[in-house]
Amino acid sequence: MFDSRTKARSLAFLFAASALVCALTVVFGDADTIPHKKVLVVAAVSLALALVFSRYAARIHDRLLHAALIAMTIILSLVIHYTEHATLYPLIYMWPALYAFYFFSTPVALVHLACIGVAYATVLNLDDTIDATRLVLVLVLGTALVIGLMIARLQELMRSGIERSARRERALRLS
Image (cartoon, rainbow, N blue to C red; front, side, top):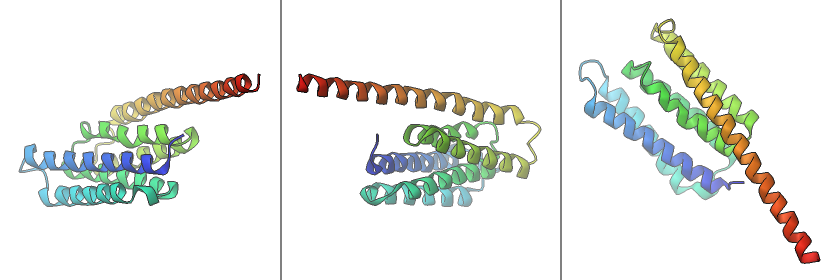
């Protein structure tokens, strides 16, 4: 339903938004607890990926989009790990999750959601906060799953409506 160019440009916007979140974290975050250099490196990588996906949108194929979506998940995980905001920033995991449900098939989107779950659980385990934020893990993944399935269902209804309309148009032309 969507061409690769649209998918790549949309992903470029997500990378740019994550770079902005990183920059705002450095500007407004606690200077004592946030490792500015690490967060700024993550922001720079994210911004570079945004520029690449924006510039070469017409040449990017779905395999690269899947890899980039996993990179987005890793970038968000690094920001959560570096800033130690295990309960605030995970909501940003919604970006790659909903992107996956919007642009890819439901089974593929579920795989991406599982990758997000593994990444977030890894961060929680590394930061020794897995017990305290289990509910947030369920909330982040559950919310993304429910909204993603709703998006997939709406797109399915839209596709069937378009196909039905095309069939009726062909029937009218033949009559």
